[in-house]
Length: 75
Image (tube, rainbow, N blue to C red):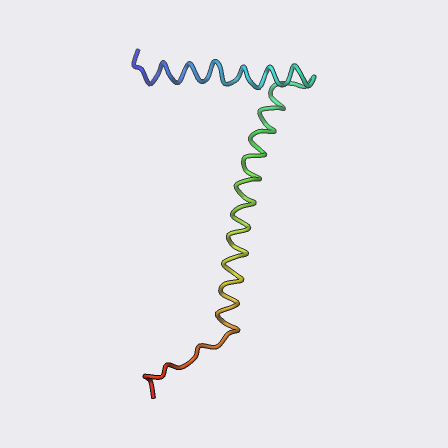
């Protein structure tokens, strides 16, 4: 077995154990805990993408409102 496949099996075996331990501690099902982590991942990624779009809009708006000054050398 290649080392990459062994590493994959190791993380699959021990990674799911973390969610099941947390679910046992909270009294929930492990699948709900995993689903919560997936949703939180998408929310945090989407949040920063929204911040990026807002800042890009503000910079574009600032450039449109503030007029460009003509250079002295254009006279």
